[in-house]
Image (cartoon, rainbow, N blue to C red; front, side, top):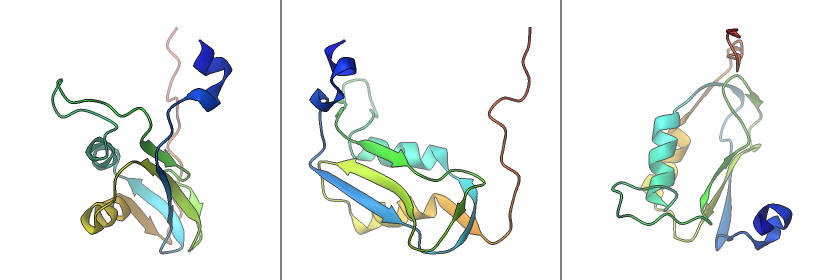
Length: 114
């Protein structure tokens, strides 16, 4: 309860790395499964139940499916305690499919069942 009242007491990662868009257009697709795998690799999740979870790390997305993004605009902030490899960074950018064609945003709620 105290961490809810005082979020500044939550664990903090050693590094906050901003990822900026390399292109301009609309986010056509965001690969959530791959993003989850990348988050697990920096300690946000577990491969097996014995793995520890680092509650200080994670990925904060600033853009999602259907959003317009300009070149150089913030896509996400990665909170990490480790160095990110070139492969990790490449794979992260590969999770965002951006092109010039506008698409309709997917609704959060399709139907309310009563």
